[in-house]
Structure formats: C-alpha cells, structure tokens
Image (tube, rainbow, N blue to C red; front, side, top):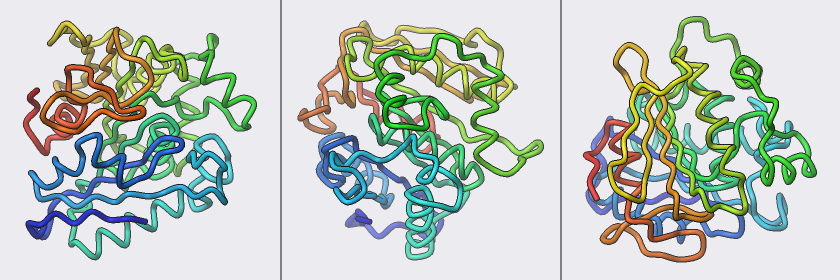
Length: 279
C-alpha cells in the first residue's frame, strides 16, 4: 500500500481515490504519468495506490478473474478493502465519497471491487478493463481479453455482479465511467460495450444510451441515465490503442499512458462530481 498525501492537508471529509495500476506498472509512476498525482494536488485529495507484487503474479497484474482474489472478504479484494478502511481513518475521509479506478487488469479489478463492495464506493472508472464475471481462470481470462463473450445477456451480466455481494434491495449501485481505445489489441474493445451494458442493467437504465455526443473528434461519449442522473458513461476513442488517455498539461506519456487529446482524469473526476472537466 502506497499513499499520496497532497502538500495541502486534506480537509476532514474530503474524498478518497484508489488508483490501480496495470500489468508491469508501478503504482506511484502510474499515478504520476496519468495525471492523478497532479489532480490530487489540485483538489487536495489523498490517493491510495495498491501495488501488486511478483509473489502474487509474475507480471504484477491484479488477479481480477480469480475467485479467491475477487470474492468479498478474501484475497486481493479484501486487502484493497483494508487499505481503504485504514486510509479513510487516517485522513478522516468522507466514506460516502470513496472512488476507485484502474487500467487494464487494474481496471478489471476496479470493476470487481465495485461488485464485491458496492457500499464502500460511490463510483468507479474502468479503462481498457473487463466485465465482472468474464472469466474465472487464467486461460479463460486470456480468451475473453482477446475475444469478448458474444453470448452475454444484460440479465446474465447483471446477475454476475449481484452474485459477488450481499443482497442490496433498493440500495443504489456505484456509478461507472468506462474508457476504451478502439485500436486496442490487448483487450477486445467489445468488452467495454459489455461492461456498459452490465452496469446500465444494474442501474435499471434503458438499452439505448440517454445521450450520445462527440465532444472532440477523438472521442465518442455515451451516457446511460436514470431519473436524470448519469449512472454509466462510455468513452470510446477511435485512434487509441491499449492504454490510459491523457491530454497536454495533465500527465505525461509513457508505456500504456497515451496522448489522446482528451484527459480521462479530468472527465472521470467531473463524472464523479468532485471536479470540473476540461481539456
């Protein structure tokens, strides 16, 4: 567990953000390159940076598909939950404003955390990640990364999430921001469409998005809303490969951190309601 503490002391009741790196990445470097460190400084919000170790995975990927690591109360999911609890106490965070995001395997793990602990997180973001329940073994994970499940249904997808946690009754599910490059050759872009359908179904949204815009030429933005509140958003970037999108002025390009003309950090924090989105 690494923690980023902004120079300006976070106010009691400030939000808390959990950032999950991708395979082969370092948690601190990933947070800096993507712009999360700069944004945390700007907003005075602490970050929790879980770091995978080679003892758990030789490529330092979060084990987003292993039942023993994504189940509530066990494995890596429990470890991340404990980090959130510890950091929330240390910083006096608003427990109604805890957020989680990740890239690739970290993105899939972020979705798994939202499923296992929906009462802990207000919202999340998945960049080039996977739907919850897409795989339970390493061979199946590799297959679904390269070829999304063509037979998934909205009802079945939502059931896979509900199976990960205690019955929620009428309690709301965390809201979700999804980002995907259409030139991704590591994760089939169709997985982002499936992930959006999964969480739109959980929120009781219609099949078709409530709105669709092209805010800039490099991005297509769809939103699924219920009762006027955006529950799920999906950004698809036609010219981007596998990676986390950044724009000039916030973050720096590196392995799997890509200059895309749009800042995921700014738009994600705006979607969460803790900052104003701008590029």
